[in-house]
Length: 194
Image 1 (cartoon, one colour):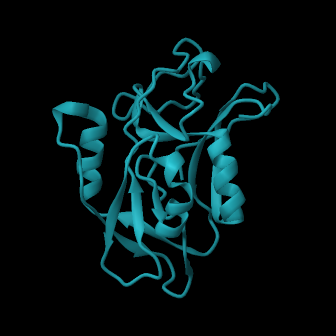
Image 2 (spheres, rainbow, N blue to C red; image 1 turned 90 degrees about the vertical axis):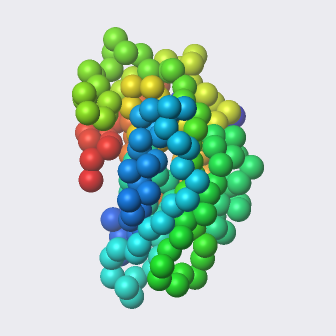
């Protein structure tokens, strides 16, 4: 890796004038699987529709759903070897014609790396934590993305993967800091909000 302080982020499309994809009811099946694990069917098919100004450019990191990262096919192909360490890339059916294909990154790696004593109490309904503190020795540094048992419907991104994505997408992606081992770094006040 590198000598930068360890950090974990939430990724989403930037607030720029971009078209984004909103998953249809297949998002319900995804969340059910994320919450229940092997007790629920692992989803294999996804569909989404475009939102935003039809004249705007299509986002390459196209979903703001915390647990459903959707990437353009060209972007996914550039990162495929790394992304597939965290889980498969599955096709997303988009009704309206698009300049690219889109893939949902089904993050199936759950890692118990949260410092539960230093973190906020998880919300009962979702497990979302206002403040999440990670145990540096337990972070899955080889994975670009992962989920945690306390908040299984939120995909967390390691700093090195965020650096790669922001290097490719620039201002088209927003990286909200969830946690950093650097005490001077300030986490986003609402990393999972909109």
